[in-house]
Image (cartoon, rainbow, N blue to C red; front, side, top):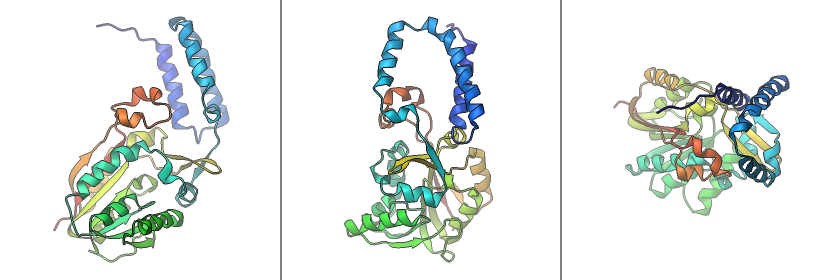
Length: 298
């Protein structure tokens, strides 16, 4: 089998990769240079593309919502970002949650009647599930707005949980307080993974379980993060890029045993959750998340 490699296509991909990775931080001059390279190189592509295909693409993009032509995005810290996101967080279709939630609930479903800390509980999606299944849940979050939504959610279902405003880097609990700690889709907002793991291990009782889900490091390195629309525009919450090896190095330094690690991938159902599913054909099969299952030695 033979194929022809066109170097100008490869260079278009590299310039596009730059724009993807640094769309929030690159200077206008740098962006303009990379766009110019793409425009110049794309001229060579025209001879390989039928004119009717070009017209179909033009018609498609002409009918797209206006925000696809340009969008101002605020890069926000955790508290301000989730203050703006809180009102619409549960209404957005989040592809990462689509694959993360079933895996986490599968793990949690093996346990009953535990003292559980839902660390960085957000709007309480896991808090409510844990309470429904008979666990004694403490829900902590750094965002007052998200914590308020979690309280409303559990009150609406007449479920019980203890709520506390706090930071996962400085948990306001004594040692051996919980049988299980869950931290879902929050570690990517933390600069010090080792510090967070140390705190989780400290409050876990011997033999206790720690479950962590997170954005896959590949996407954080590519500049993808917690992007959302809100009433005032669009935002992305600060995300820290790290390698999988950073996770492993951090785990080696804390008293926790790795039981399982899963890397859920983008499948057809996840791709279809995006506004433009045909654009995500190339992403299917790529890892989108991490789910760790760990235990504190007894």
